[in-house]
Length: 348
Image: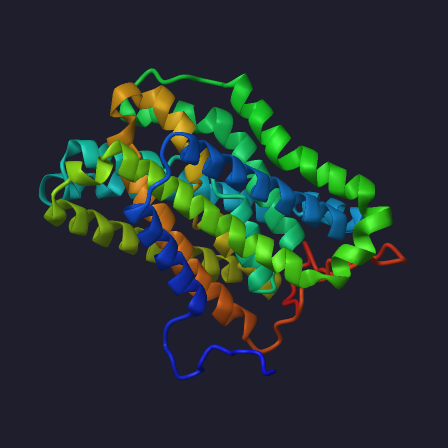
């Protein structure tokens, strides 16, 4: 029996259809009550399992190479916490015409939150980029954002905000670092098995993103944030966010080339430096905005869906670039890293 294949003549990527279908499902059947708790728990478990698998596949030498790639991490942090906020401040002039003050506040807030972790890694892996660097860059951004995002919000939004949250730090450690370290510890026994079943990791990559999309969009539907904005304002907000995303995607891709990074590093910088984390932004918004948090995170929720769909297309195309190769995360008996980091040369 022949395996069914997606027709090559169709212009729409099948994964985009899955994302759109997930959004439609959340709009028609949003998770409520116990269902919302189950969906949130499943999303958390999928992300934790994703990091466990990456820990099992990633050699210790490659992980250390990723940590030592300081130029890449500084570039991602600069894009996330410097370039993004500057663009958000520049958009203030559009406030009277394109959106009201509440929506602009939400737009500015989205430029302050840290980068994503799981989707940055997933798209970097799909595009055959530097996955160890993406893991470290996303993790560093999340940890720095715990302190820096509330401070930037207090300075730029004029609110006192809640500062450092020990609970948020514990949550990040439990959800990301602990599974990754567990995978590293068990890599000696299960690393070969995981490497031979790369399709499983691919399913977790894509499945975790779909779960995050469904959970986030369901929450917006349940709280009725979509009905509080007129279609005209919503369309204007989407247009501004599309320009913001396009500018950041271009800056991270061509800017990293100008800085001398190789292809695999540029992929990691583009996906880690151009995206914003809904998982980190929602709890921070609840502290900073209180009862107005639902409307304040509307721009972030829309941007989150947009970045996933656009980056899914880009990742597929990057994987077909001339010279693209499979990320080197297979167990290496010699302990040598096959991923070029920190050299400034074009890799692959």
